[in-house]
Length: 328
Image 1 (cartoon, one colour):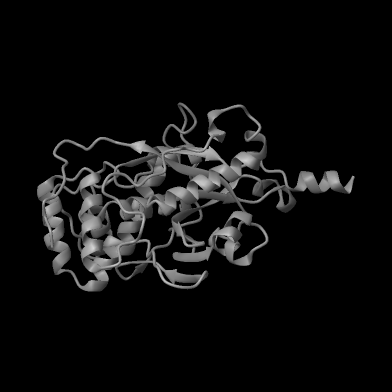
Image 2 (cartoon, helix red, strand yellow; image 1 turned 45 degrees about the vertical axis):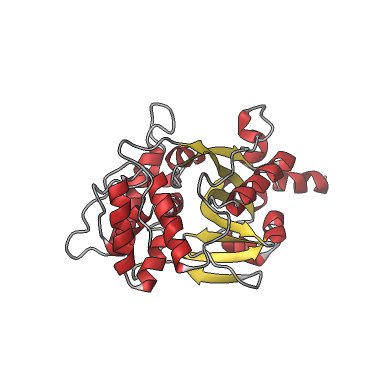
């Protein structure tokens, strides 16, 4: 009897979904970073700039705007330029653990309330893929017509508004977008945060688009492996985390969202929005999950990855988009 109770305690809603014969359980094979992208983080300032300009072009910005972005970035202080070109603060070097605070300008990149973890993750994902959006978040500067990688006009910074206000605005825009139509004709309840399918519909990284997959059982391990492969290839992956019935029925559903930013060399890095930090952790321990305190911190205090938002193809460029000819 105690064994049955223990098994029940480990039950999650995604356990039941994982038993359904749907395509949700198949990992996406499309994990590559796209043309011109490199799986390795740029190691020099020139490489970082070139990579950023490539992402801006793949986000659909016109060539003249990518050229303007290049000139703008060259005039920025080093710290600000680094924030724009790598807002999620990926880093290389020795060691299998560590934590870094993520800042946009002078503001820590945190979720603004208990329901916007998904919105913060999607905002950082979009900014990592589109330096034009990242420049607006960090500095309040608008390039060209101000169209970001989400297909929405970014507002003027306005007097007295800072990076924290801009990131808050972006989270609210994304919160509305991911909830709209999430229940067919009805919106998703705002108090429940972001539904995985809504996140998949809104997720953008340069020209990458996303789908969603349940993480459960042996097929779930394949989904996590696909997420790690995508991150290793240069495409960040939003992950939903949660608990199980052992910690209460309200825990047995997706409860938090983090961003797997990169992987390789036996480690992976995860942006956790409630703390506004990136955690570097051992990949094997990340896959094991529940028993590792460092992994739980990276997952926002939850023991399991329960849903993944995986890359699934590329969108065409918007009218006027093209590849920049700018070179440093």
